[in-house]
Length: 104
Image (spheres, rainbow, N blue to C red):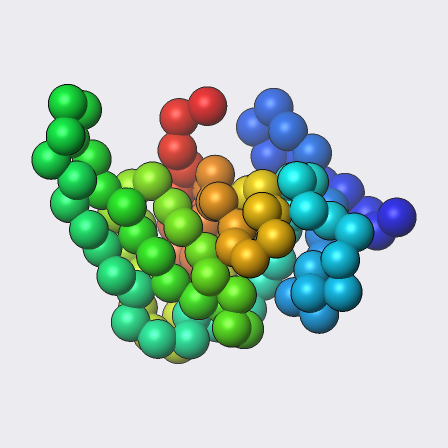
């Protein structure tokens, strides 16, 4: 198994997008790094508890984050989250200038 890092209360496997696509990490906490492929989509969700959802891609892999991090196309990011098979549900996003987290 690859190396792990700890962020908050959880451990995350350090992997590449190629390793995620080859299988074996579905349902596991992972961390990947790369650049944001295109403009992130930030959606306002006006339900019972208003909030934001941000969706973007890193090396072709979709990332969803509950919040509105300050990200742009081409920015380097490190994404911590749970790999669901076709996307990562991010719990934290680290950029060169800030770390954005969601509540656990």
